[in-house]
Length: 475
Ligand code: UD1
Ligand code: CA
Image (cartoon, rainbow, N blue to C red):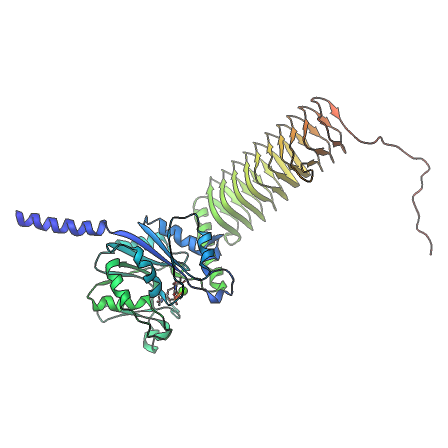
């Protein structure tokens, strides 16, 4: 009885030590990224409008780590600035002496009883699921490595296993002989390592190798010497472990990422005319039976209601678009709310802080900025409406311009319900057009127009009889 209890106690303790191990994530981001030929640090290059390192960071955060250490170096201030909003610990690696040296810089910040997960800042698409799989195997006495089989393993560290299939060491490309170069299982550069062992192994690293660097990968052989088991998790998704070292790889990963995003949308019930010609650079929430034509870019946070149709060659950034809205071709829409049953475009530009209620029609060559347009109003042709409040049932004729800027300040235009603005009208703000008012075409309105009346300002029409058109002079 007492024996059983003791055993129970030991098992419980062991389990406890695994589940209570704190997770510390180290993201390596000090490298320079020579092959990108860029003035921007490598990890700040963008994939789907988000920096590489932010992709890694967002994934790291899904694991709810106790802390995150980012090792920065080359133009590090820019990296810190770009991530100023996140709560991480910044560790400077002034000289890039290798991945082992980089990890060592972070160790003073990490507790002995922590589990360390090492990630690379230039491997943006590593998935939360894969990391969880690796972490779920982690325990206080062994070392975990993420591996992948590559048809062309050139450039990667090779996983060398013994006859029993156990990992013995990792050999870098530059150190590999012809035999090792044949190995297709490679190191993805992602590891789980108990901190107290890692500290010891890092202290034993040397830089006697082809690159004169402290290789983090050498700790595998050190762990084996220490009789610590090495376990591996293998991913079959090559893209998730692909690093960005040049702009071709960046483009390849961008395409892969876009394919994934668009597939997700189609699985959610969106008709996409050509999956290769829709780009999503942010997050999209979708209703049912949406149809998206070719060459559409959705950026930031976009919400599309049921049965929304988006025509070709349209860019939409940060927009809430309600049910049954139809957007025709060639529109540019940013920071806008569009009510149900609106029709937009073709060739319309909706600029930030525009709110359209239901059944509004915005036609070709119309620009709307920071304005509200109430239900059922129509601005169908060639107009600029800025800093305006437009009521319901309003008709704004072709070529109407709200003159909102006096060269120093912006002023408001108010157009009340059921007003009718004749074509080619300038409304010089601040100005109010009353409910039901009509403005005669061609007017320049500088004072308020009273409700339910006709206001116009245009020189009287005259006819000059006997007038002759000029004729071409003979030389
Ligand atoms: C590394 C691995 C290799 C693995 C590959 C996977 C080593 C020695 N090799 O090679 O086995 O197959 O990743 O992608 O680890 N970094 C620093 N400071 C440094 C050096 C690098 O922060 O002093 C950062 C880089 O910014 C990068 C990461 O560490 O984010 C990996 O470094 P990199 O030089 O790209 O290593 P690889 O040659 O790709
Ligand atoms: Ca790399």
